[in-house]
Amino acid sequence: MKFAKLTASTLAIAAVSAAAATARDNVQVAGSSTVLPYASIVAEAFGENFDFPTPVVESGGSSAGLKRFCEGVGENQIDIANASRKIRDKEIAACAANGVTDIIEVRIGYDGIVFASDINGQSFAFTPSHWFNALSPEVMVDGALVANPYTMWNEIDPALPAQEIQAFIPGTKHGTREVFEEKVLFKGCEDTGAMEALVAAKGEDDGEAACISVRTDGRSVDIDGDYTETLARVDANKNGIGVFGLAFYENNTDKLQVATMSGVVPSTESISTGEYPVSRPLYFYVKKAHIGVIPGLKEYAEFFVSDDMAGPDGPLAAYGLVSDPELAATQAAVAEEVPMN
Image (cartoon, rainbow, N blue to C red; front, top):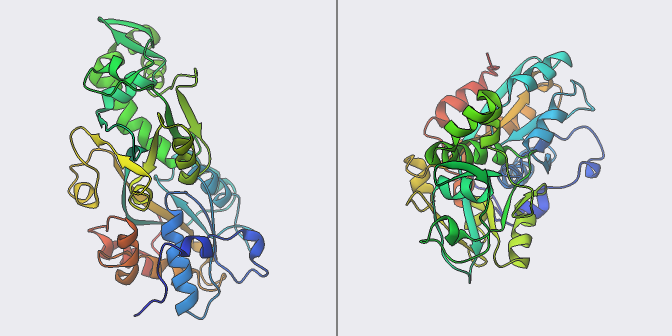
């Protein structure tokens, strides 16, 4: 099948407001800003190649999208939630309480989380320990747990540039934040020995929570919008380092340079092999109860994970998605409408 005009410009065309839908014959999607560009590309191609209206795709973050998804079943509720993390047990319970019981989980592929700064600035080679020591309210200094004294990256490690610490990280409603906390902050907390000290001082639960907390003195800034807002912050503050999805970075290499993490350059290749340490699967979730009621819903879900779209030679891979080696199993699960256990 041939698809017309599959370019990055599809983002502006397909990611329209829900207010643009004049009737409930559209598939309605909301959620992850990381999944947004992929869903937008699929939505435009779907509208051009099928006898259904172009799906309405909104952003807002994984948590916000899943919250809307779990509000209920019916024409006034969205059909699909995009997510850059798995749905949580408490969200499944919230869905069930509102009658959303049969949920189809669809893994579309993989993405990396990267750390990027101004294209004309200094280069960075990071480890999780660097980021924990930069952002945690309490860090280990000379074997003791103290209030974070660091204001410059080279104070943490002389091998890092003499540049002020200014980080722009995903806000708590974004699925990217959870992965950043788990694979960067928590890992750095363990590697520096702070985990043991925090647990000893605060107890296991509070100590582990402290491992992923961030300082509130302005060195770390939560970004509640999408990656374009993070890019704008980095552009306005040349000392800033932003946390982005790999695909967004790869489509903005004229403005950003990327750091290594644990000695590995992020790329589709290093993510697909598992070498790059900060990567995650991407998902969308479908209300099975809406299939057969909302025109084109199943067809859209099947089209999204088709070889033509999500395969290694498709437009999603061209935009930056790392194709799922188990895509055939996902295709079968969607075709058979298999809900989560």
